[in-house]
Image (cartoon, rainbow, N blue to C red):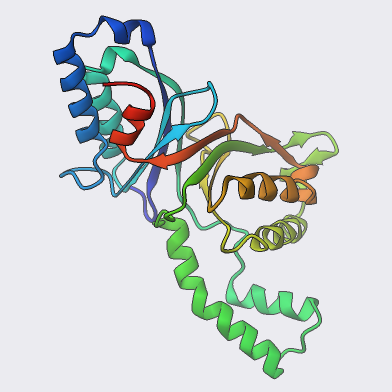
Length: 265
């Protein structure tokens, strides 16, 4: 078990239409029942977070985001789908295994105070003290959201994996800690402009996956997904040092609505 935080799996599937046509009516009915049961967030033994979504485009038909302290409880959902009567028609399209963490770039209260001074505040002034206390009061809740997140009730979501470059002249891991913190601070400020529009969760694939990080975005409107990704690519941390994998955009759904949308059942 992890010392803190949760395991996280992003799983994407497509339906094999040729195999789907071979199922009997009874097999289809039972398979749909089993799928809905496997993806029920309130079921006994379910992961603490279960989100189903309908994938836009042809990369997949539906996606799952699963989180729990026990990685095998998460994997049990995948196994339940494979073992169901619909198992022969549910084809894995993509997956990403990761864990939650509090990033090294999240400033401590002391580091935040230093940043305020660098931005022109006078240490000990009323404005400095008010800003420092406000940050300290919300830091615990922010870190809890990073480790054991609540999913926002927003309709549009997007996932993509990413790396930091190791190229000559653009090697993130050869930068000093101070330089990396400075670049990530700039990057974070760009994201903060979308507060109330987009919620972001970064999970870590280092040691688990081919990519180092997974980025999950939820948005009140799908346009905001485009806006935030475009805007943040101008930050040096992204423009110079980031590499991106495939993007999976989807719309949060119940399992029942997903099956109906995908014409299954």
